[in-house]
Length: 433
Image 1 (cartoon, rainbow, N blue to C red):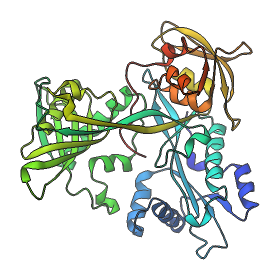
Image 2: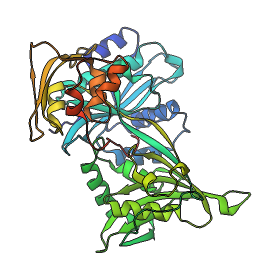
Image 3: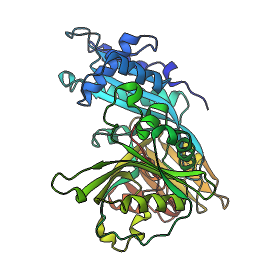
Image 4: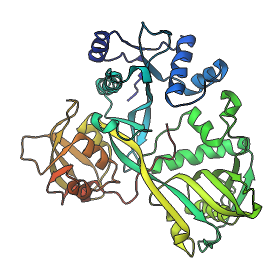
């Protein structure tokens, strides 16, 4: 499926409701540079960032490509050209269990000006996006969130968790495998070509990961500053691991922070580590943990099933903090469930409640021995009853139905549902968007 997000109109219901309250909902024309700049400045304001130069904002717009920029304007405001609400969307492939890539409606840049709270702006922005995506035929919407209390009311749920690590390298003696191949210190330009191929391989093999656009790729590699005025990455360093044949199989992006009182107690701040093979994973972690003058490694946004603890002699040297990361929202139950594969066979009837009226109903899910799933609407009695948000949490396989049942979010017999939806590998997304 090919959907041009930027070409989709705003939802008429949200547009008309906001207009009745003196507000205008519209898509910013891609050729309107002044309008895009005003929209981007409103987003930066909403996320407590400094103002960006016109050149930097323009460069980011060029890198982002065909995105849809939606705003809400108050013509009575002192600066009516600046939106009082923003949201951005585009279509990106989401990897689901089994390795299929499903086009999903990605959402970002959700802000409301502090002067316009409690006027229904966020509700209409998100409702408009979800109805627009569903009308365009997409089965899923997704986002990463700064405030976790907002999106559940719109049918989203966390479906891929992540973890932050802090490693005391004085205690974490390496006991993992001794890798073959070579690990190199490289400059960003040297890393770029090989890194893209590694990222793509890992993305295709990892449920919850998405296609990374150019702006996100440059942000990961620390090269966004070349065109967009980002000065924070000049201290970033880069490791690349090649296999015995000289093919890049993994990389890390990090920086070093000195301890002013003791240089031998410096910290490695690991921004990204992407490895397509177990050998590359072990080689890069070994190099990071055994650096001279370093007593601590911190790592942000790591998988919750990270095997590092089994590669050091004292796993208590690693402190782990888990948190919700990727939130998804199902827009079409049959197509979302049929897109993934299943690690067990079985049949279950689901009663799905969607308060927004987008994707609810009663469905029979049946998976055969090959892992293929078939979903049909049915009038049969339901085995399991759950909200559309709970189904989203379960969809990628990282959350168990028994856990949601214990929390009151799922009702019924989950003895078939859990083995059907569970996956051996936890879903994981390696960046924010």
